[in-house]
Image (tube, rainbow, N blue to C red; front, top):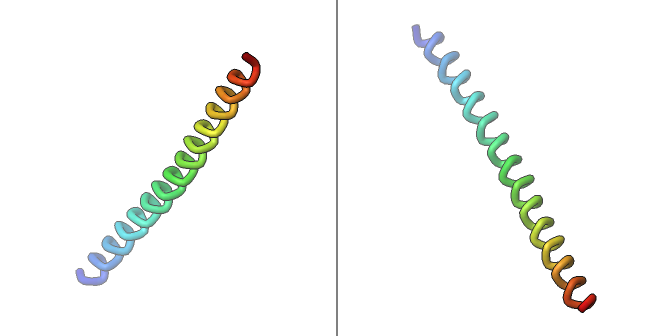
Length: 52
């Protein structure tokens, strides 16, 4: 019984680790995307100001 519980706990832990890693990667990519979008937007607005 104890061995089975340990396997279940290990399985749960692995699932949790995968979810955490996925969340971290998603947050990292999301932040990169947001920052690049902000830089692009600022660059475009600066170009528009220079054009006027």
